Every structure is written in structure tokens, then in C-alpha cells.
Amino acid sequence: MAYEDVYRRSIEQPEAFWGEEAKAIHWHVPPQQVLDYSNPPFRRWFVGGQTNLCYNAVDRHLAERGDQLALVAVSTETDVTRELTYRDLYREVNAFAAVLKKLDVGRGDRVVIYMPNMAEAVFAMLACARIGAVHSVVFGGFAAHNLALRIDDAQPKLLIAADAGSRGGKVIPYKPLVDEACAKAATPPARVLIVSRGLDAAEPKVAGRDEDYATLRAAVGDAEVPVEWLESNEPSYLLYTSGTTGKPKGVQRDVGGYAVAMALSMRTVFDVGPGQVMFSTSDVGWAVGHSYNVYGPLIVGATSVLYEGLPTHPDAGIWWALCEQYGVRTMFSSPTAVRVLKKHDIDFIKRHDLSELKYLFLAGEPLDEPTAHWITDALGKPVIDNYWQTETGWPALTLLPGLDMKPVRFGSPGFPNLGYRMKVIDESTGEDVGPGQKGVLVMQPPLPPGCMTTIWNDDARFLSSYFSHFKELLYSSLDWAIRDEDGYTFILGRTDDVINVAGHRLGTREIEESVSGFPAVAEAAVIGVADELKGQVPVVFATLRQATDEPHERVQAADGMRRTVEQSLGAVARPARVYIVNALPKTRSGKLLRRSLQALAQGADPGDLSTLDDPNALEEVKRALQRGPEVGS
Ligand code: AMP
Image (tube, rainbow, N blue to C red; front, side, top):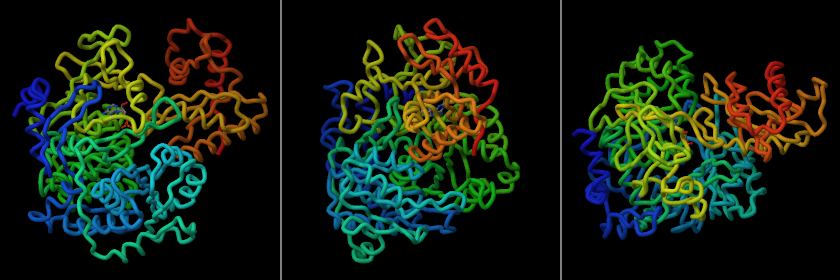
């Protein structure tokens, strides 16, 4: 079917279109109304319908595909591979749900999950969904401070954590981070459930709070827990993402709309159906992990491959070996991961039989052309750049090979996905810009099913963050874009102070807050600078409380800043370079001129400086860039 026809129908007759698509999932009670848009921009999809994500992802497949693989969890960190059929998954998810019930978790309660890509993370998510608890997975690489912020916002009844993660053979104990986060949080969870893989033998227990999963799992045996039927618009999960302030935003997802969007995108975008295999290399802590490691593939009865480990261990062919072994049809990864692989011999790809592999999807950050060409040549398959956000939950711009395969245009993630009304508009006038003109990428509400419903506990912030930028009520993606004559959209980067490091979204202000937490620092400006491997890296310009020309004092200060950021925000946010200056360029009203700093740091023209307060500050920055960063550890 032609994309244009299906897309037009999704836009012109949304209720007929989505009403039809809703039949792809199981409803305990069918919806009474497809769309309620009486309170824009809030919308409710499939009103009155009752369903359950876990039922759709697991129970529903038992009769026909109980013995088919549902989940393959491969860890090259622990050298353990777990292959679970739908029947196995049903058993484990029920047991996990029984444990949650024992810990007094029920419908509407929040559960924070702090685990790496291990099978139990998937069991925990599905178990929450089964009993109507709202999970919030926090990426295992996040530091205690980040975890504490999320705990205080979500106010979970329970926190589930792995004893440790592992990266390149280096064990990272999670338990001390959990303890620190609980100590920092104003409202720590009453209970902490530890799923131990024996990686951190020293892990101490807090009496009355900590529980051991294996012990409770043994006690519940093969218990079965009934599914809790939820109204389509009840929250299913929260996923925190960085904004422009230090406080993360709890992106809230519904139940029915999300399930329908997953089923539709698996078919039309990823071209994966029952019995076929999808391998996403994402972490379960990200939006891609939620949608295409867990819910998407399972809802359609496919097999999902989950991977814990480096893409280069035991060698740079590991992902392709898995594709060959499991007959992966669709693979999903990130440009950064491909740039890592690009440093290795192409033969690591070529030596594998990839006859089953049809596509590689890449998302999360701009896909540069050299990387796109390299991987396309290496695989000899379509490489499909797709654009989305934690907020959208599924691709907003993409090609849809499940419908019809349009030619790839390098540098572009393609066309609006089904149900997404997208425009590129002028930042100040709000008018549509013409082909080839740069503007802000926006979406006309109502947003399609699957996209966020609000920010957890903060409708006002949902409105002010996304819908307050233009006269017309529009969702701002906060990304710059250009659309060419043929309708291919190109993404040019963020309009706000958010940077993208190896696909991880970081607010420059949260890094600034952290840098400023180091006692020697008077003030700091953080920008994202282009990096060959990671897309962007954080770079710090800082003034010290006591200016010094002593090299070792400057190095000490720079080291302190790097350490502070790493401890509070995690290794991914660690500044790549620190420049110590005597003044920072600001406007007369005291706003940091981050865009000018960024331009200078990338050797470009600093742009409009008419609002610059102190020209010396700019000269300072130029001198610092010539001198080079403070080099420390
Ligand atoms: P996150 O919510 O962390 O996935 O980050 C979403 C942001 O990543 C978007 O707003 C974009 O700035 C960027 N992004 C995601 N996918 C792409 C893509 N295919 N091309 C360019 N930028 C992308």
C-alpha cells in the first residue's frame, strides 16, 4: 500500500483510521470513543476501552506461540544467554508480579526500576504492567543524584535494582548508588528489591527495607497473578528525560494508545510480525528500549533480542553473530554505535551470514553521511534513519518499509509517520517556511496514540514546555529542521539548551549546576561541541572564585569539575574539555551567550554579538581556546 494514501487517511480521518488499528490489540472491554479532544491539547485515545500491556505482550500469545522464543537476553558481560519462550516469559512475569503483590504494590503505585539489560528488567516491567503499577525505568548509568531526583518526582512505593551492572568487564555496583539516592531523596521508597546476579558480593542489606528477589521468587513458585484491566488512558509508565532545567521531566504514557501505536509501528515501520525476530541494541532505560526491546516486539508476537555488553566484545562482530544466530530480520541501533564499529575491520560484518536481515534502523541523534554510507556498504541493506523523542515513544519521522520502501535520502529521517501532523515553521512568525528553509519542527495536536499524555503530576509544565511557543496551539519538538522539495525532512539540532552525547540527552544547565557545585568554581557555561564519535560532547568554560595562573591549581580545578559531574550525573555527562577563563560572555541582561561560545569552540563565526555586555569576555574565550583545555586525569 502506498505510504501517501495511508498517511492521508491517518490525518484526514483519524478516528476511522485509529479505530481500525485498535483492532490489532486485545481489549477486555472495547473502547466507546476513539478520540476525546474536548480539552486541547490533552487528548484521550480509545476512551472507555479496557486493556493491559502485559496481557497483550504475553498471555495473548500463549495459545498459538507458547513454545516460540519471546525474549533472548544475551550478556557478554556475564557470558550468560537466556532464551525464554512465551510460556517461560509468562511464568517469570507472573512470579515477578506475585512478588510485587507480596511487597504490597498495586494499581497506580509507582515502581522505579534501576537495572541494566538483563531479563529480569523485562520481567519487572511486564509484571508492573500486569498489576497496573506504573514503572519508571532509570538508566543504570545514571548516578545517585539523578536517581534521587527521579525518586522524589515519581514517589515510588518500591525500587527494584540489580546488584550491579557491568561495562567492559568492569563491575559497577548499583547498591551503593541506590543507598546514596535513598539517603538523598526526600521521599525514598519504603522497600528496595535487589535482583542479584552475584556480581557484587559485598552488597549490604538495610534491615526492614531491602528484599532479595531470589528468596521471594522461590517462595511464590509458579504463582499466577490475574491481569488488572486498565482504562485505556490510565498511566502505564513514566520515563524521565532531560529538559532545560535541572529537574527531569516524567514523560507519561497511557495504556491503550501506546499498545495500538506499538502494533502499528511494528507492522508498518519495522516490518516485523509474529514469529519474526527484532534486535534492538538500546538500553531498556531509554525510550527505544521500552518500545522496541520490550513492548513492540512482544505485543506482535515476535522475538526480541536484548543485549548487555560492548558492541566490540568479544570482538566487533558480536552483533552480527547474533543476527546470524537468531535470524534477526530487523535491527535497531544508534549512529554512535555504528561509529564505534566503523573503527574496526569491515570483515567483522562481512564474514556473517546476514541473509535474514532486512533492515538496520538508526535513531537518537543525527546520522552523519560518512557513517550512513559506511554501514550501508558494509551491510548491503537499507539503513533507515528515524527521528523521535522520548516524548513521542515511537518514530515521528521515518521511512515505512512495512508499507512501501521509499528511497533512502542520506541525512534525512524521511517523512512524517502515520498520524503525525508535522510542519516546519518560522520561529518568530509561526508561518510555514518553504522547502529548503530552516524552521522549527512542530506537530499539530492532537498527538497520535503512543505519544506522551502529560508530564507526571505537572500538566502545567507539559503545556509550558511543549505547547507555549507559538500563537497557534502546536507541540514544539524543540528541533530545527528543513524540508526539501520532495518532502524529506532533515533535522538540524536542538533549539534549546539540550545536547546529545552518544544518543543520551543531557541538559547543559544540569551539567552547569553540577560543575558549579565544585567549590572552586564561580560560574560555568556548558556547551555541546561536535565530536567525531559521540556526535556531541560537553565542554565547560568556567571562572574560578580565586583566579589563578598556577598550572597545577588550574588542572586541579578542572579535575574537580570533571569528577563532580561524573559523580552527580554519571560518566556520560563528564566534560570532555574544561577551559578556565576570567570572564564568560553574557548579554547585558546577564544571559550566557552559549550559542556564541559553541560557535567559537567549533571554529565558527560567533554570530550576532550586539547584545554582548563585555567584549573582553569574548577575547578571553578566544585566548583560552588557543591555549587549549586544562589537561588533567
Ligand atoms: P531523546 O528523547 O533522548 O531520544 O532525544 C530526542 C532528541 O534526539 C530529538 O529531539 C533530536 O534532537 C535527537 N534525535 C533523535 N533522533 C534523531 C535523528 N534520527 N536525527 C537527528 N536527531 C535525532
